[in-house]
Length: 589
Image 1 (spheres, one colour):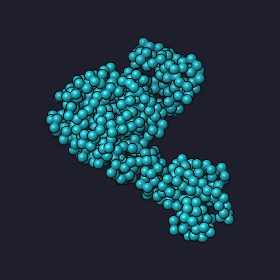
Image 2 (cartoon, one colour):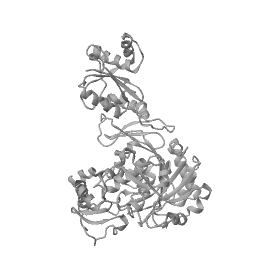
Image 3 (cartoon, rainbow, N blue to C red):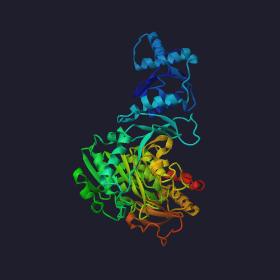
Image 4 (spheres, rainbow, N blue to C red):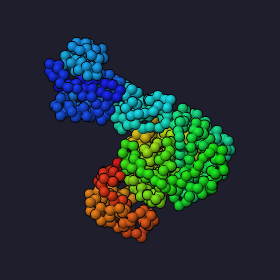
């Protein structure tokens, strides 16, 4: 049976007349993926799979037209509004209603369907129309003075230009960007890279931060303006207070922090907080030791230690990659914008620190152990980092690289890098910073520097947070060649470590499959599983021994820590462990 589809910005109306053109009934549904699926399911139930006519398939009807192509069950024909009007005028009512339009489309299909043009299955210009005209109204996107899509670029090596455009939204203040899970990136994110000498004065650093923001453009102001409360996540998670050439090596330096706060205050008059969920130290002590207390007096900034309560459980938009919910401090939950101020450092587990990895330090140690040991583990770590970005993507990312650190994230050798990186998209900013460090942000597990686990930036792009490919990033300022400085990471590729990682995944599947058994005996506790056995069980993470303790039970085998809760309260996506547990060595999944 042929069906007519009349499209509007928020709804669509379907009519399936009989062979004589009589209207047995209509159906209205949201003009969204969920609504399209409902309509398709209804058609299947009524065995009404036939030709479909969609009005405005190049604009408002783009989404449903492409959706109907996917199952391969029916042809989709383009219907021009002028021809719809002709058939509507032939009806006895001549009403201009949604139902009348849909019936007119269906009658047109019955009479002239064979002569109507097919809607192409995969057309790039149609996809661009979808971006500009369709999805913003669908998904409540805010435009911050920019266009929805500035460019349409193939992304990745050997990607075919005709790949299906299945779009995922990645949102950052500034122009909205889009990325396809099949390899398309829409809109080039702008990232500023400046040569800023470690010998620069405080005034010169301030000028550099302001210049970088100006180069990035209106997206900076768009992300900061109109906010009630902004939280700056500084890199001040532990007491690694060392300087090189007068600049902090491992923590956010007061000079860059002061310049960043001054920039924020150009556009934000509301409450401004700086904090971290510190491990083994107090954010308030570090606030004083780093010189923030004195330097930031003119800007009305308040410190906060995010490891202190009260805590709230927040849902990850879209369901999350690792967990659907996370516990976070109330000041974080109350902030309506996040700014990430990171250091340019190597990292043993992620290759590089950056604005996205910096967000992992928001998670409180009371719930996740110190140093967030429950999540700082194979498979979980890069995915939890991505979830932190999904919770509230930072509107401004500043990476302090005047002095950097080689080999590791804490207590590594300092290196003069004379660099400042600033952007409004966390993934694009970090991918650019990795290129400064001589690293490939498109590489993945098993390739340097990702010898611990998956590349969190690659996972983040897959989840729609932003582009890692150079083709999706517009680097402005002094350019990468001026500041590039190869970094080292003190970790080697290890088949033995990969085996432990796969053993961890196997323990996760054992827990999933024997959940009821574990619940009966260990409800409300955290268990450590190794070789299918519970080797420890405690009520809190603080009760477990030090990470990497060679003398503990299970040493030398993969250990999976897991909170035991009823199925209805389970927050972890345990099925993600399947391809790693059952796959070949160095499976990123």
